[in-house]
Amino acid sequence: MSVKEVGEELAGVAASSGIGSKRLRDLLTRSQTSTLDSLEACIKHQIDRKIRCFKEFGEALLNVVRQHKDDKAFVTEALAYVCLTVDYCRDKIIRDLQSQIESTVKDECRSFGYQRIELSTDRVRVNTFLSNFRGNPRILSERIKQQLLRNIPQLQDKNLKVWINLRWR
Image: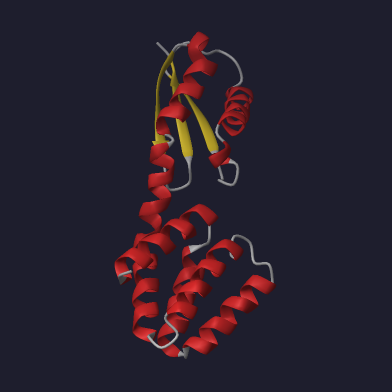
């Protein structure tokens, strides 16, 4: 496999596991400044500490380090590729769910003059635009959020926010 293919696979794992960008940059720096044995020890240490969201990505990265034990440049380039593309992969996961999200919100808000939603992928924010709602927006947003989490399991580990935007006539 090429560096790009390995990097894309690792970026997908990183995006789905929810590992932070800063932690990925720290791993890249370690791969650039120390030996692969040191990087492997660091990964094992992070897995053992049960760092949130790290186990899945750490195991995948350990496999790459073990497969390319004699090629530090390969591992470093693959990690650089991960750092550059992980945000795109995270956004893609949410964009792929947009039709399901819109359908769930539409079903929940049909009686309130549903107009549309705007989906922000950086922090998974759903802006819901309604034309005929006179109640407490917080109650409705919590109800929508519960429905989204119930209907779309991929959103369970995301920091989901639902906002109600009222269009008064």
